[in-house]
Length: 404
Picture 1 (tube, rainbow, N blue to C red):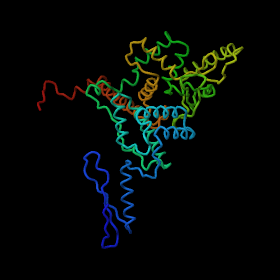
Picture 2: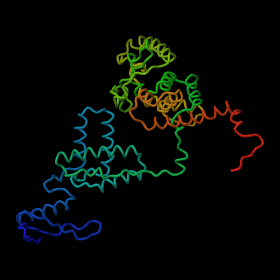
Picture 3: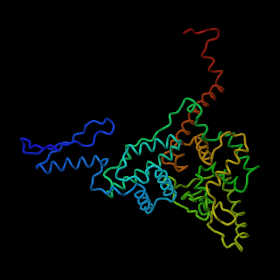
Picture 4: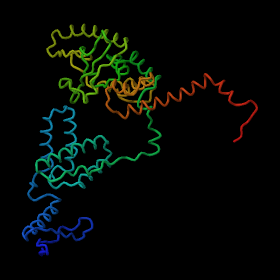
């Protein structure tokens, strides 16, 4: 290290730091201080920091990512978040542990994380898996910074790789794939009457004519149905880890916008009223002598009173769609999207639609609304032409050809 006192009286020291890892160029560290020892120490601290990937020597470099990740997860689980969210974060941690479990928390840099996401992308993992992993990583590294386990958060600099759409992808992906056309809905609902199993008719008519989420459907209780005012109050959703009915949890919805009261058609109310009468008879016969009977007052429940998992209804709709001529093999969400098209075709404005389906913001809902609205405009033009075409023909004089 070379040091000299400047004319101002300040000391300046300079020494070689670690060479550039990419170019191998010389890297001189120059620092100033009021005294020689101060300037020397500044240079030493910077060299030490660069040798340890930007981490101060005062930070404990013996703590691994795995240790900090699970420590953060334990604290996060106590913050009142939904169980399903906690499980998602746990799943993301396990994904990252395959890459950086035993690496010192203090030395992991943006480049290492970027390579991890590139590998996840190359192995064709879903975009949602990578997005969730980045959100989880960001929270873990921020936790490490706040608890003096490293000096910075490397996650914001990470880019999630994105698949480039081909012309074929664009041409083959249409908004229409996200919902049933009227004739498709009619065919599907007819199948619930002819080939449906228990509750198929009630489930899928209710989803199609209310726009509810399947988790909201599973959590419905009879106290949510107002038979006098023909309304359904939606205040909760069903969480069922591993689809185990005995582990179910009724939880608040994800957003305040999801809490809503919707009006339903008299025919739907009549269907539910008939179902309630039948269910009461079943309940009286089944609960006698059944020690494990769960009386949760659910609208849709098994013979033992326990609710259904969303996955169960997903399997049921796939079963029915495969019995139709419909090519769109989708889960229950397609009925939610179909409800948006029904409301749009009925002339309901976007804000009211969003309120009814419990959305604060949804690109899918807006895309469907825009698509149907534009189609309605085209249809309106055709209808005018069909009805008033004879009058339009009067604009062109007979026998005359207008040349441009």
